[in-house]
Every structure is written in structure tokens, then in C-alpha cells.
Length: 305
Image (cartoon, rainbow, N blue to C red; front, side, top):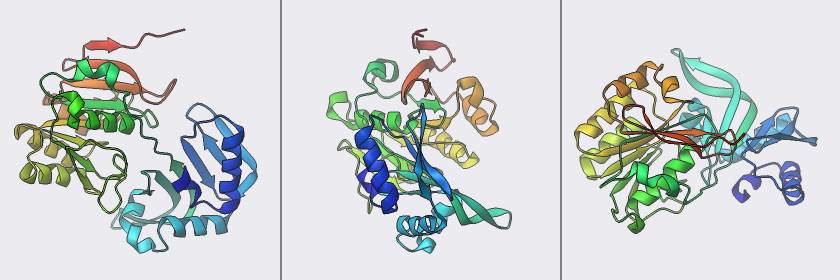
């Protein structure tokens, strides 16, 4: 939280710090809306700091801080609606959108921010490894809604693939388009990573996958949040190059993502051997199902009523 608190307006960071000392809460999001009280979210409940309002001047200063007083430097990230800061925290941005040739050019007059707190966890994949690993990692698609822990699960799996404890020590390549998986600073990953990991930071997924195939001879490529036509084409190329693939996608079930035309094309090629379904119903990173390539359950979480 330190890297987040230091960029917030002091009157807000002091109140959040006081609240964290007073309450036992694991914050997942901090939402800042102009002329509204600060909202804290732990994934299950919302808490309002009713005496702490976020003003227009607070918004301007906060945007200057996260852009290092150079909005031009972050023009590409702003076009996508979020900025990743030190520690891998992602800050979503809302406001007036500026269009150019029917494409989003920038966000102007920012009215709200959503700070998603990155919290690396290690060892969460241990109970599920025997479903995902054979003599190598199975081609795996991790499916889950927002705040379900997809990136956390992906990061932990990448660490395991490249570590000596896996007895495989796979050459693991991560295309980290939004700096969320590794939280790189000047290209150097800040989150604890195993030694046989190579990272392309802030690189578009499709281009990054092909760069790795051409130049780094990986055993497995890791990418977060696939969805575009170019992603689908690159994944096809990766598989035909003899490289394993592990990636994530937004959704609540295999049936849910199968309705999306781009994902449907990938699924029709039978690329994935495992589907991991995550839920945030009880906690982030909760695995509800693991399916095989035919969509049949290999694992289902016991439901406690």
C-alpha cells in the first residue's frame, strides 16, 4: 500500500492509513470520484470514508502525480483507460473521452479513478498442479470475472513453471502488456519471480508473443487478458511453433466466453487442454472448476451451504 498512499492527497492517505490500523480489512480497490466520499472495497463489502471527499483539485494533482507531471508520456495508457504504477497497481480512469477517427485518443476532464491494489500471492496453485502439469505445462486458459484473481493465479503459475521446485524449470516468457504480472520498473520485474523468466514489459500481446517465438526459444508463453483478433492469430502461431501457452480471459464460465466471436475461433482450434474457472464469490483466486479439453470437469469445488 505504501506506493499507493504516497501518491494520494495527504488528507486522503492519512484517513486510509488510520482506517487500516483501526479495521481488519484487505483492500482490493480504492475509488476516488470528484465531489464524492472515498470508497474502499475488499471484494465483498464497500466502506465509505464519509468525512473524506475527493475534490476537483485533488483529481488534478493526483493525475499529475501518477503521470509524473507529463500526461504526454502516458498518452498510450490513457487511451486504454488505465495507468499502471510502481508495485503493479492499476489505476482505471473515467471522464470525457476525446475521439479521433472514431478511436479513443485520450480521456479529458477526469472525474473518477479506480485504484486496484496488486497483492502478489505465492503457493495458491499448489492444490491444482497435478491437473495442469504433466511432462510440461498444459495449454491452459484461466477464466474469471474482474477481481477473481486471474493475474495472481497466472503469476504464481509462471513462477512455478520456471522454478527448480517444478523439476522442469521451463524457459518461461511473459508478455506483460500492462505491467500487472511483474510490476517491472525500467524493465526489471519487481514482484518475486523465478530465475528462468523473461519479460517483455508494456508490449502488446500479439507482437510480444511473436517476438519471443522468434528470438527467445521459450518453452511456455504467459499472457494476460486475451481477446482481440490479433491475439487469436498470435496464439495459433505460438502453438504451431511448439510452444505451450497459458493465458487469461474475462468471463464467468467456458460457455460464457464461447459466445464471444474471437474466443470462439480459438476454442474451435482445440488449442487449450485445460480450462481453470475462477470465482470471486468468497475470495479472489477461488478455483471453482478445472475442465479438460472437451469441457469435462476434472475438479469441482465442494459447495458448502
